[in-house]
Length: 124
Image 1 (spheres, one colour):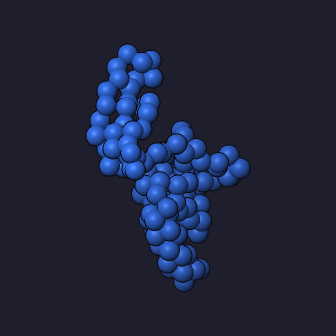
Image 2 (cartoon, one colour):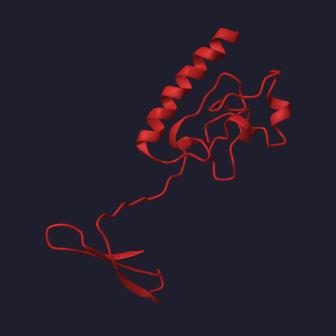
């Protein structure tokens, strides 16, 4: 964990250490990126959308690895890349499993999801 950030006009070093304080060391640094974690708020989603044990929504081929997928999925085709186990419903950004947890990635996935929505609508 970060104990301290040091520098004059900009960050130059960080002091890092174990949570229990057993090991502390100073490292040179030009930047510091803080990731505070992500917990998806997906408890409200129905059971027809498969979530992993951490609550993230499974999409595309990854959803197929769950036993419940065959019971839920009614189409002959595989789900599209960002499509959930409920056909026609897509998940993008931090809420889906294996997301990159970056704003730029989420925006890109949102654009991809729109493309898949149009493809799905052309089928029905």
